[in-house]
Image (tube, rainbow over all chains, first blue to last red; front, side, top):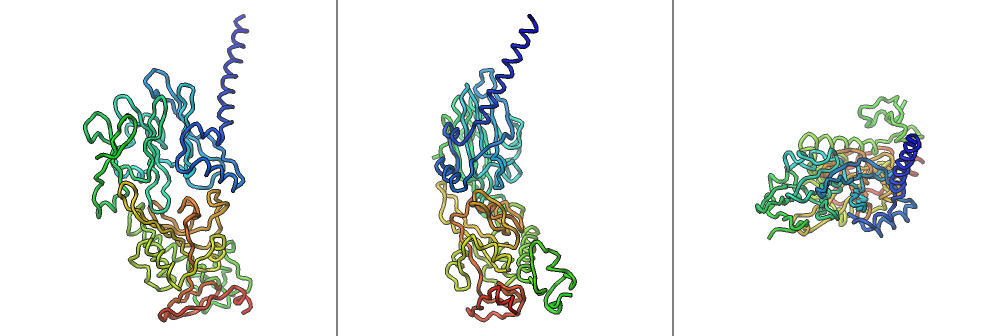
Length: 226
Length: 221
């Protein structure tokens, strides 16, 4: 009887794993509609696929467990890169799975592994990081909210994309611009961290003024300060 | 032995075939591939110059291209120009003609000077200035790039967080849309001669142009 129960449990366990695996394998551009697209629209991607006669396929790079909504249950963050891709970007899709729902954020131009360049203005930005990753940084924005930072590849002469996703019951892209992160602090002393951005690197800042404007974090969205 | 040994062969042995690089160069008549080699060397020298002077990540695309261009042609015309100003100049000057992206790598391998550029003006919504970008085309093999529609020519880039003398231009621009390619057809006061496999001396005299020499003329010779 014990053996029979053990076999049934094993079969159930393997079925669960298979289901998760199948879901992952079935992910295609159609799944991108569930989340928000970054950088280029879904139509553009479909058009590109048609022009290039390829379908965009993904392979998993990293996955992380983190309790986003403080309910004692860990949610999953998955980073994926495009398969057989010879263009820039270390990863191209961020997926957050929470309450059995999947939210995907896609960037065909690519996010990259964080180097000193991306965080040149912010000392010790990588510490603390709520996930053990070299690609993304998750930090508390205030007592309740966690935000995820990812950095895009630097094309031409503009800084790469600075993408910030608010992790919550409904993960949302709250900031997505070609800027350097200049600071992540509570500037208006309201208990919530805000960000400052700049287009200048350290050399250029020697000849230009530091950024005056910053973005306030209000109900999960960053707004320009007045 | 290379019959052109008396001409400018720099540091290469007269017994060496196509500068020890048969993948990049061909020389069926045992003559020369000096123009392509000069562009390649100028790109490497410009990169080293930028690395010696500036931080590894600062935006210096204009200075890198200007340095290489001066080394190849002797012209200081780009010195002090921003990337946007360089694009403006190439757009209006009789010394440059625009070419199609699909033909650039072949031209680069023949030793033509190709400068890729994109003009970007204005400010973003936060009042930050936007900048144009330039890169120098170099001899080599095109790199595969789905975002560029199959392949991208290779170039030297010393722009923001970019320091390389040869890499696919898909690493410089996210797509080829908006990027223009300009071929230099102007005078040179150095031993460079675009479009040929043979070096000749030309002295710059104002706006005087050199008739572009096609490859077949060189082969017939």
